[in-house]
Image (tube, rainbow, N blue to C red; front, side, top):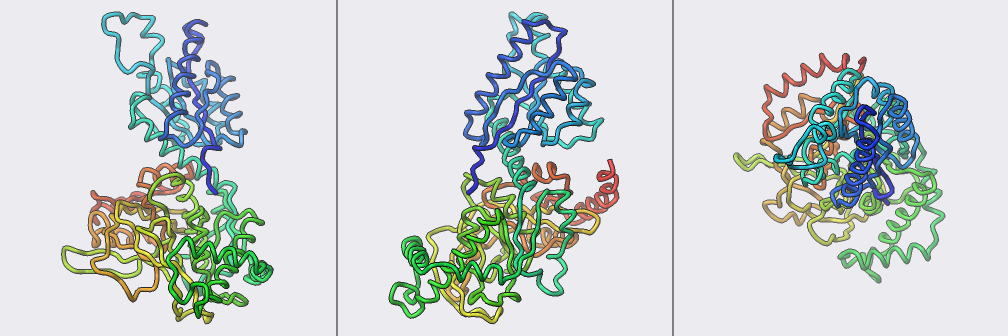
Length: 501
């Protein structure tokens, strides 16, 4: 569902006519060389194209405007090969409607100490040419990522690849549609939010639909397609005996398949990339969607329960950034704690909807009663999340602004098997520890719904938040409660100024 290779970034190289036409031809050749190698790097998931070299104010405006008009282009990478006067960049940077990365590099890694002359010095001026661009960006208040190092270095390519992934998520969000079946859960504060401001900030359109609209699609599904999907379940998962062909609950598996097919049809027909539901507004649905939601998330759709559209769009953004990476992304909820001294950890889960992309092993399809919702027992996939590092991310609406919270965690195996817990789950240890991380999260107003992303790290989240122009707070190994509270106070004071820049 998500193919980042269809997107591209433009390498825009800066110079000026002062150095002569021969130097400019060399700059263009060098830019093409750099773009070709970056384009071929596995660390960079999009195409990298060399744009015409910028040498005047008009050319800066033209290339930045052209990049902003190109549907496939998700961002601009600026490289100052020589000294490129910053005043000529102002109009172009003001016209740029895309994320900006400043690649502070030079063609040659090493200086030719024995042969270096002024011709070489004039041609290779990134060291101070890049500072000139940085000054213009600072004067304009432009959010951008600065990547420093030789362009062939793995760390540089990795950093640029992270930025490209975030740029793809930002571009996806600007044309995204979220389908919201029913409203948010009654009296729940954190799942509310300003959908108009979300469209202004992220570009996403959040549309409400009655569950009856979904039921129409579900009821229209044919028996033949249900049978084919049930057979796919047979091959893909370890089914509980009662769900297998001839089993006592096979009819319930077929109903789950019917819901998946109807839900998929609704989302595809409407061009939706994310959705929400709520167990209080099921009406004609015979089951709360479980396996259907899990499978759709695994294919790239964003999801959150209980009408939480903010987390649904966040899960989708994380899915886009994680496309092609190992580890997966899932809707998640901090459910309960293990508070043994020195071994504190979080048990995360939800009623049904945890994405199998984070699973440690082949999933088991099971059916169990659900004490809420008032419908038939739903089918769901049950598994443990794979151990490893992850980032747990939340998006909240403070009324005056959106805030992104990123908490670095380490997923671990459960201390013991969980044979009576009939849902998929993840166990993690927050950094630096549970007490500090939980206190910081609560001080920041963080919600209980998150996007748990083993495939990503906090750098992806930082780049995405910067591109979207939203506040970011990170909880990591260096966090202290006192320091985090100070950061919150500073952010509360500074953010109105940042937004009004």
